[in-house]
Image (tube, rainbow, N blue to C red; front, side):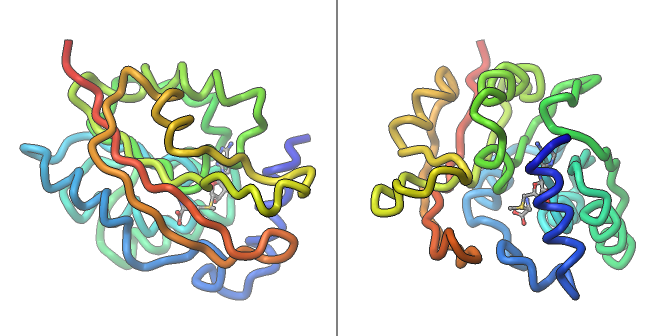
Length: 204
Ligand SMILES: C[S@@+](CC[C@H](N)C(=O)[O-])C[C@H]1O[C@@H](n2cnc3c(N)ncnc32)[C@H](O)[C@@H]1O
């Protein structure tokens, strides 16, 4: 049994409307739009842990062929509805992101709030997979909880990365820009700070 999947499935089940989910935002991270703006043309995009599909639809509206993955069926139902309302097509996969093998690499990979929920033992696999998912010359945008020493007493919960740790984890990807944002997450987590990273994979 996957504990994280059960926790998320319950969250979706208990929420009247996906717009009430604690992470829900209608505006994509500014760094995602900066990465899109710098690319010469849209291409293939991968949205890891797409949730209710706001950013997958955003990418499709900007001309990307989007593959969106989530391990909760309700998330994909919401994503499908949003895509239909927006009049765009997405390729949806239900499953754990670390099991996803891409038939071809992506020009843009987005992870907004997925990696920090992976069990620590899966982070190395995720990092290896990213090298297959992301094409040389591609961009990777990550929203990840930042280090929060004041609540270090919470024994379980999402992972945290300092900016230095993130840069080390993803090298040789090159950090293009860094931003921060905050989320109100239900008890016992409270207000959480997240780092927003835009990495670029250099072409050899
Ligand atoms: C915090 S929400 C963020 C949703 C969306 N990316 C956003 O930023 O609005 C995390 C999403 O990732 C999904 N998720 C978490 N871990 C996952 C995993 N290992 N594989 C697939 N989906 C996962 C959850 O079901 C949830 O929908």
